Image (cartoon, rainbow, N blue to C red; front, side, top):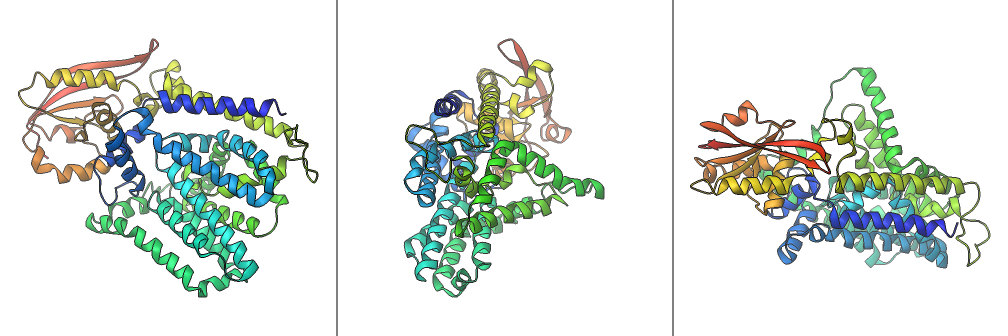
Length: 495
């Protein structure tokens, strides 16, 4: 076993590095990067912290794939170091051995492999939430021992969780789980009479004020977006089956092997840590299953639920009760095959993810349809070259407008032009920017970019006196056709 563990780790880490260094920006990576070029108190889709940091990094270090994902390097380091601290707290010196098991489990989980790789909000949110949860557990442990607890741990936890709240809204699930764990414990419940806990709550509210202000100034658009998101009026049977679908896709993306080892470890743990891990799992999972009964609950919204379960892996894998010999991996018992399965499953998924992100979407081999977001990663250098060529033939600098927020973000990133926008039926951050810039853009000509999946609608065409098709740009990789972008010129833009 000592031979296979480093092989799995090296291959998974190698695939992660290939993605970071060579994969073109995912459409949402470019979209969130663009937010950082338009600093504001908050944004339509998510809170602002990740984009604030992205904007600061870009202003200092410029545009590159490494710059785009440099924040991931920081958060991954914080994330795994916090797990080492948790393992040290639970197992003492054996943490130096067990940390590699936990790292492998996380890298082998499709959910965490994706979210820790992409320059989305999730990698920052879960790193901050894990730090906050760890400091909270250490504080609660001390509080049970001496009735007091270290102030710096409590306030540090509050700061980390508050920052997570202004990174992504679902980080609130971790805080609710921690508060529930406190409220259901007879001794810890006294903390609700402690002024320090209320100061922490005040700190969290203060951190959230920019988001409240932005929503107040924009007719509560972001809050309404999440309140009304994907409401489905399907049949009762369909709605009752929705939670089963949520559970199924969640298990698949977490990894069935990881889920089994989490369960095996959880059964063997006791004490305060088990209580907190239980509630931080039950609260988000239960709420999302309820939400799935009348709306859509996406599997990655539940990413906080599993964070405190990963450190329980050693209880499922180690040769307990006897410590392993220094020369062995220490992994044994009936779950050894599960461990192998976890590694192989993770490698297969990571390989497919990197192939789709760096070479071309596998779906393209089987036809010209499917995986729209995957195909949209490719071809923006060719499109940008054509757009620049057309721009030089026009008497004045045109507006650059696409038919979808994803394509607008990709083109903006490729051309380093934060003024690229989108006209689409789907409301996005571009909708807000269009309203803000309406007077500046009125009467200008525009280069319009669309494709077969997101064509120019009649509503979009109606914004111009005339729309004239100019050229098509066919995109392929290694001889495999991906898609075609259509370029046109629109005259006299009327917002």
